Length: 380
Image 1 (cartoon, rainbow, N blue to C red):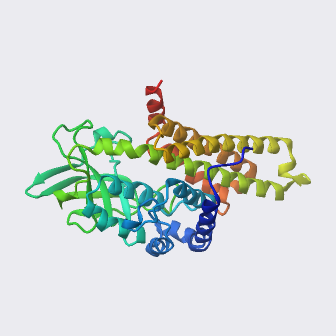
Image 2: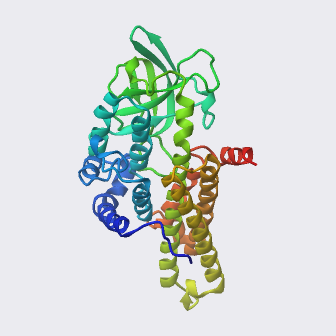
Image 3: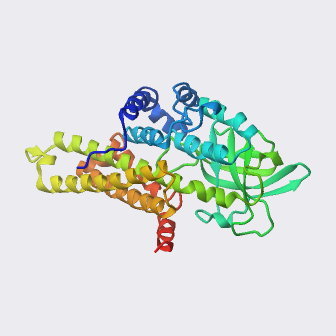
């Protein structure tokens, strides 16, 4: 297959650091986190100590100021070891970006160093019980009252929601009731009166990932918590960042597929059936060849998209295509991996079974794949 040319020696040195962190600080505890439905708070502090949070945030705000290719390395290593629990990508590569790109200087100075150190955990609150992927139907409202906004509504499927210290909340600041023009992004700190968090949601997979519902009952925040200079800019801010969010899903999908292939290869080479290794049967070899080919094709496209990100040239339709194809490919690869494991592929002590229940969500979050098709179709 084609060699990857995206990364240099500095990336590989960083990769070794991330791999050690995942092997020592994450993998041994992941099963316990699955039972409690969120990772331990101490993990965030440890990641901050090692400089693994908010990688692209400038040093002036507590980050290390590298480009997004380093974020991709971290995501890949997290996926290779099957660690779906830590919500680092949402925190570092989505929430921090909103504050960095649209926040006032005082907001950056206050929040970004805390996020880089792990002292503050960030979440982005978009989806609502009645809206799903349709952001223009958001109903959570923020009404001016004196110098404050009064926020009412609820959000669901919020990664890092249970542990979050700061949430970027998508609110409707106008009176239209629907559409894009009245949406704004407002920072809401945990601990505000009326801001409550439900227990982590009982998901099919990704059980160690902190995902919950948030409620806002007359929550008062100062108007200075608005992200950006004017109200109603939220939809444009979301659209600017959503392409990268969708590429994140593609990066995770390809890396998870590679991990699924690796564990399937290991199993089929060791497992004997009718006197020979499962991997020696022609059907097995052909299925493994198909899996390897699909992953290689997806990797080339995703790497090209990362290059486009580094040049500020990634288009929304390319990101949508990457998310669509790789998340579908991941499910195909994992399903084949389960089949090649036989009955053991359905046992949760095997990594392929965990990948089976964890991977399905990729076709839903970040905008369903049906929405991705619509976005791509608009560019035809």
